Structures are given as structure tokens and as C-alpha cells.
Image (cartoon, rainbow, N blue to C red; front, side, top):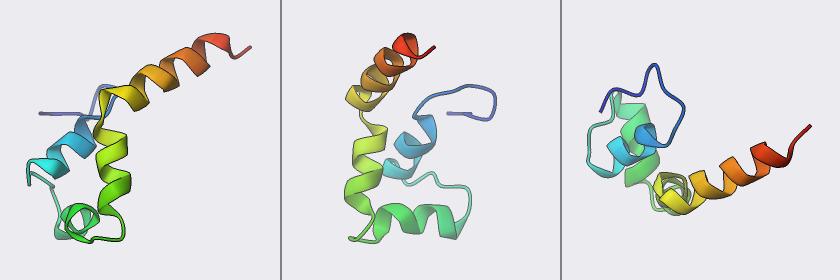
Length: 58
């Protein structure tokens, strides 16, 4: 999925699908130290939470 023109979590979902553009991108998912963070950022829940917080910002 092309995420270059949209705001969302497609970048992290692509990493989960092993579609990282650069080896350094993909390393975020293959490294056990950062994989949990990638999984959290790829989830829909994080986008829902961000949207709610953004709607309350002034």
C-alpha cells in the first residue's frame, strides 16, 4: 500500500507484511526490541486513539 500521500498506519502495516522499502525500515519489524512497537502502531486501535485525541485538541 502506498502511504506517501496519506496519514495513517500503512507504513507499519507494510512492515508487518515484509514490504519495507529499505532494509533499515524492515529491521524495525524484524528486530525483537522494536517489533512490539511496530505491531502497536500498525493496529487500528492506535489510529482510533489518535483520532480521538486530535479531535479534542484545540
